[in-house]
Image 1 (cartoon, rainbow, N blue to C red):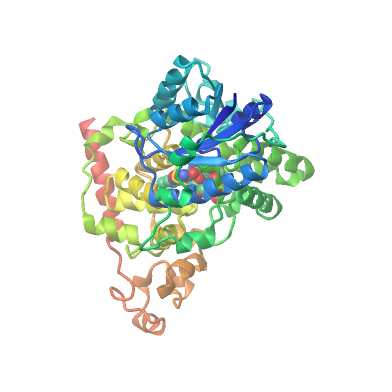
Image 2 (cartoon, protein in one colour):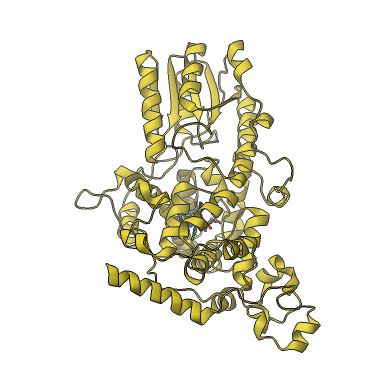
Length: 482
Ligand code: FAD
């Protein structure tokens, strides 16, 4: 009888432990995925991530066909869909790579039990992380709460070598009952129809394992040198851009780890940049570890002190932030880049998030939800952790009183204004001196640049100094209550 591989955000053939184990059984390997909008408690994917998923599944299907198998897609809920596949194919076993949020674990346990009761074996693997959340405890045997000692503990451990892609898969025949129930990827409603807002995203990204590998190779060749500095400069293509590929498992962190380490052995001068890069990959593991042990991280502030924060609900300012019309060029460039391309750099994510939370006193969950809908790399662990880190409410986070000044951040990391000119073109005629603070430009300079403040481009939605004071005051009030 055949064996099954259930793909879930591990859309690759290389270093895919579930696929490798299934292939090694010597049985026919039937591969499938379930687009699950129906299981209780699972958060539906946002629009940009759905777009990515569509391309990712298509690329995976093509790669599996090249290897001798194919990918069949079903609609959720997963419990009934997987059970149906297992029973109708008469499979002896199912293989998958593990997921780590509480809801996903509960779902997978329920499926495993249902299948085991029917005599079908379920095998699961780590295909997503360098180390699973429970593998790196602190000296007291508890999960780490703070990144730096966690990083030290990770650095002291070996990372398992990546597995090669199976050379050839023995694909089997799917019963016609299941082929009838299968859904072609175009009918899953993953791609936007009208309006088609994905044009900019399509131009910037190519989902799939091959594209992930090509991007990583290019980064090793051209990007890693100088990464530690360049990563903060949004106008320099100084980061790997692998986040959506990692999110959908088109490349695995173990592959990155070993390739990067091998590169450093070749080019010892890369040491500092490579260390910094690998530490970012460890941040990803760390946020998964936090989400695993603190499942509420996506839904509420980890520090309960923030439950009393006097957030302001203001649909108008929220919209101005979402659309990139706050009057602060670096915030607006970031939010427009996000809307157009589904992505932005970490530095700009921090500036934009800080602005929403601290200048506009908007609940970080509103921002988290917007990012969830618009990021191609929207990831439950990294997104919630990123937002709570900026808010100061997370287990390990930047203190609330560290409030980014959007003008000086822009001047520091985009001194010539190149990033602004790309994403806020109406300011492109301004000289660098004023490009991060157009309201300070004299009228003749504004006129020459074709800018009418509050018309072509908004004046600042809140003045920086008083907004900063207001945020600090709100936070002090919280302390008084604690
Ligand atoms: P690189 O600098 O090339 O880093 C390589 C990889 O390391 C990334 O692809 C990512 O997987 C991981 N990584 C890098 N920085 C971080 C970090 N700070 N935390 C965790 N992992 C990291 N990342 C997401 O993948 N999905 C999200 O939904 C997400 N939301 C965020 C929200 C906020 C408010 C903030 C401040 C950060 C968020 N991040 C998120 C983290 C980070 O900004 C992105 O991972 C990074 O910008 C992706 O670009 P890159 O692949 O070029 O990164």
